[in-house]
Image 1 (cartoon, rainbow, N blue to C red):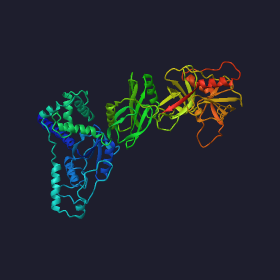
Image 2 (cartoon, rainbow, N blue to C red):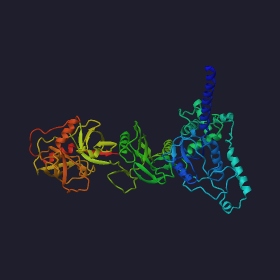
Image 3 (cartoon, rainbow, N blue to C red):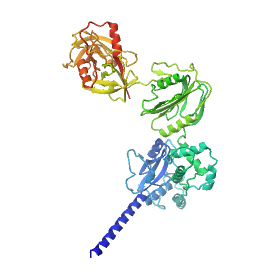
Image 4 (cartoon, one colour):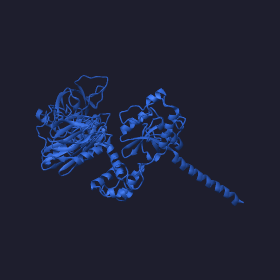
Length: 629
């Protein structure tokens, strides 16, 4: 009896699982979209999505891969999607080549900002969508104007406005349009696979590599660029054909090869890529002439400044020299604002390449030495437009031709002069610069905590990287270790006794934050052995200081360090200009000991130090501390 009861139950469970799996498969297949446009840049696609959203419901934007971005409405059931497609095409709201698309073809969503609807279920078609034959006469709705390629035009406004078109004719035209959209046929190949293979044989090695590069850019190929059409290349060709509604043969016809290359080059549309010959610089190179134009010569650079909407710049580099000159240029270029700190650097025997990037720009410099002539270029491009930047860079690098001669050192035409400019280019400036001083023979430095806050990089004297080993924000103290061991000319000797009230003191520091090459001394007096609120870890000074002096050593009349100058307090209470405070030397000694750093105490008592000796000691131990973003 149990056997007879179990059999129907088992059959019921089996059928339930089968139908549930079938329903899930059908559901995943039936959730589709109406794709209405694809654009070669995120900016253009966002602009178009914003425009469509003023006309249509359920507008979404997705990355398609290969640098392309699609705009679609949905997600709908297949029946609703076909109804939406026919209705929107009939009413002239979307291009006639719009089509039904699967969710699997879309990648990351970019519109609406922050949305992610790929994994959600289908939604109902918009209320205003009507089946064929039930559409009302158009009221002259038009696509909003945007700055990119306009949408497909609507039906003639005069006939719609006056209502002169007979209803029968309108319905007949709509039916014709619906039939065209409902049964789109893929483009017919211009060659058979055999003919396509024969036409492939006439391609040069560079042309075959060019097709592989284009397939790689489109996201279908990830193997070597060798011009050999093996199994991997054939598979990527077939995948590209399928994605573009061609028969998937794995062999590109002449027309398909042209379409692939056109897609690859579409990203360059509007940039005006043309060969530019600069005889003074002795360089011929491809440039985006719609975005840059010649501005001036300031050897060793020929400046081509931004002239379009992208904000790009180009420098041609041309000068005579040897390896020492090349290596010097390599170092100088890295101090410029156009070469951000982040990014790889590579120097070869007779060439170098620099890549610098931050949140605003990406710059790439390629320079080489041949026959006593140093030539190359720098491309500066806004961040966030990587597809176009890489393509422009590749074209420039590939096309650079060295002509006879180099840029004359007297070719400069600019009258602008400034110590923070090199050949008309701004030297990179730190976010903040303050003073510090050496406390041991290994080059460890004490400075104010103000200068190391929120830095991506900290340097000593602008060229030695340092790491922060300890901070005490409550005391305003920071301890630094150089990335490589230093040999200071002088090291702080901390006083072993309290200074006398009203005795002379001096402060060493980079008052002008690095404008001068050495620290300066400012003289004053010790007003009190504690702060205004009785803090015994502070000393009040009567001395006029500059912001750059903060972190510098405070000397007594014997040349011993009694403390570190603190920054002036910010707030509602403003103290007189000659009131400053120093952190007591004992606090510094304790912090150094806790951090495992060395320090020196003055031995015995000495007489007053000579002014010249004090200056040499101060300049030998005081260091410029810079914070870089």
